[in-house]
Image (tube, rainbow, N blue to C red; front, side, top):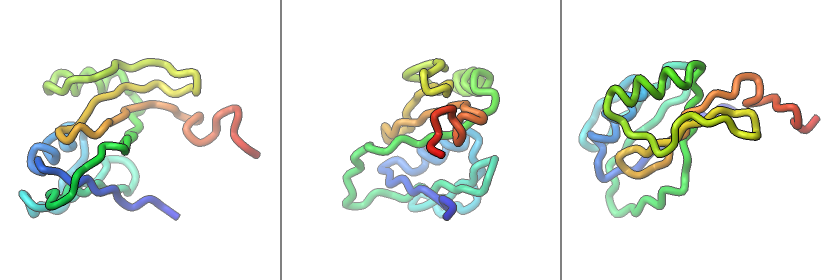
Length: 125
């Protein structure tokens, strides 16, 4: 099984697409202001943005994007005007993480975990 896409329902689809383009995702379907689909620069996953009609987002999802040069990426995004809730921080689970929010208040985690992403020392055998 492979994760194909995640869809965000938004009352601000245009601003949301612009936000994710700043993160480096590439627009591959443009039916704004109703719908757009973006492709991750690495791998094959996509992110769709759909206008929210009669949907109340609960913001209970966190989107994780791995960046091999996390600190440089955070600096690049700050220079584009994005504000971070938390700067890159080393975690006890061996990931380095930074947090910000998209225009819909969805929590975004930019991280670097390397080999520890799928093979931490405590992985179940």
